[in-house]
Length: 86
Image (tube, rainbow, N blue to C red; front, side, top):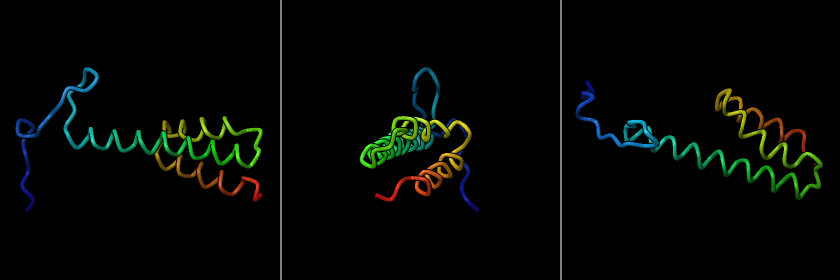
């Protein structure tokens, strides 16, 4: 069996007015870095391919994380399929 920590034993931090467990903060920062990096990469790629929709792809694709990370990754696949192959 795995040892189960009680709530009092978990190390927590105050982050933007909310109490956050250390692992949740790490996950939040990791997803934020993924979100920003993905949007920037798509924007730069679409601009390099002379897309008229570069900023929409670069800004809109990471925004779909609101619907879930799987939807965001699906949008990346759709972008890769629809982009011009210059």
